[in-house]
Length: 146
Image (cartoon, rainbow, N blue to C red):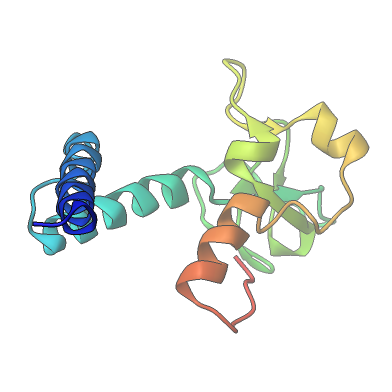
C-alpha cells in the first residue's frame, strides 16, 4: 500500500466518521431514520407556527344598531363583539397577525398593539413575514393573501 492510497483510505474513514457524528447531532431532531417521520415532524412544526401566526381582523363601529341580544346576524353578516362595541362586516378595516401585532388582555381579549397601530403600514401586517416565508417555500409562485 502506497502512502497516497493509505492517506486516501484514512480520509475516507475520517469522512465516514464525521458523517456519523453529524448524523448523531440530528438524532434529537429526527423522529427516526424513517424520512416519513421527519416529514411528519416538520409538518407538525409548520402547523404550530401557522396556528400562532393567524389573521386578526380590525374593526371600527358600523352605523347599524346591533344589540347584545344573542343574535348572530347583522345587516351585513355576522355581528362581531369587539368588547367595547358591536359591529359587523361593514366595520371591517384590515387584518394583522395575531401573534406579531395583537396581544391578549384580561379586560376583553386580544387587541391590536399600540406599536402596530402607530408604526406599521396598514396592509403590511397580514400576512406577516413569518407566514409569507412559510407560504413562499410551500407554495412557490402563488401569492399569499392570508
